[in-house]
Amino acid sequence: EHSAMTTRVFVDGQEGTTGLRINEYLAKRSDIEVLRAAPELRKDPAERARLLNAADVAFLCLPDAAAREAAALVTNPHTCLIDASTAHRTASDWVFGLPELAPDQRARLRATKRIANPGCHSTAFILLIRPLVDAGLIPQSATLSATSITGYSGGGKKMIDQYEAGRDPRLQSPRPYALGMTHKHLPEMAVHSQLENRPIFVPIVGNFLKGLAVSVPLHLAQTRRGTTAEQLHAALAERYQGERFVHVMPLRDPAVLAENYFDVQACNDTNRAELFVFGNETQVLLMCRLDNLGKGASGAAVQCMNLHLGVDEGLGL
Image (cartoon, rainbow, N blue to C red; front, side):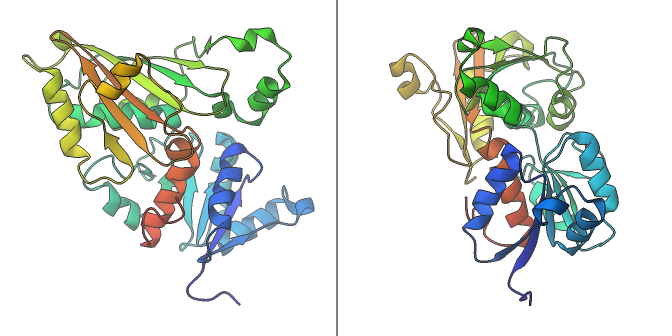
């Protein structure tokens, strides 16, 4: 029988990369009881509905349409849903699962039963931009652009198989994509950074498993008059002071400059995001790196679950 000390968790869509990784985190924990469908019932709607409603926390690791369907199956007011898809990230009745978003975000995540886990690219972009908009250093009307270099695991099972098969020589070079200017993370990037305009966003997938770095170039002329690299850096450092998983690195980080290149994979296998400010008198480059399967997906989902349950936020991470 379920003890009062264990939390019942169901991962709907446990076969995908995010679901698999969440299961790895949960497997190490004695405070969690993972509910599973028998293999032959995995797609059975009645069985999924039963498990969703039996769970204290259910992770939806599904395509958008399937995530909406799963959410509609939940009738138990006690079940907390954490949706890893794009479906609910800008919905007003869901709370965005980025605890570091704003000073009141943790209280909102504790109080809600509907959490929309952020996208990996958007997590990096929002962590850089939102504090600067809040501080009035970047105007809400700014027209920004961003580039993201990411490992192929972000594309899910199919893309991982494609790269690991190693048969297509074109995959050896980086591949810019989302050239229709409609990448699915764009709405949340604007909404949660409190920007009036969606940025121009170019994601680039590379021939490595995981790791992600988003770069946002700024002419200081685009910022509030007289803003310096020092001020931008100070605003980020102030916002994230004491944060466990978001680290603001030294201004014009000497370690990176000494290497003469930026290591996109340096936060792999952690739930950390590292923020950087490079620049001179007239131009700044803001950069954020994280593990797209860690703080960019599964790690963030588990962090939100911990926060919602009132246990140590870093438990199992």
